[in-house]
Length: 90
Image (cartoon, rainbow, N blue to C red; front, side, top):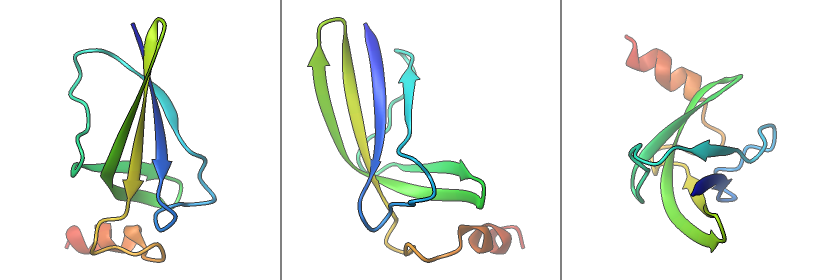
């Protein structure tokens, strides 16, 4: 069975310079749950998102899972995640 994962973003978390991400998943690897944090590597630096929803679509031969990501409460769309990482390193 193929598992296809789509990553979507809330309007608050959407980064127009970065496309919606899609990748393949291997069965047996831990899968993100609602409330988990996921960090994506962007050209401007890493950004951490919060999983706020999961949607499952079952098809013949596979399943598509859409993860919807938002920014954690302590982050806003305009915040510079690189600055956060610099402060964490101090």
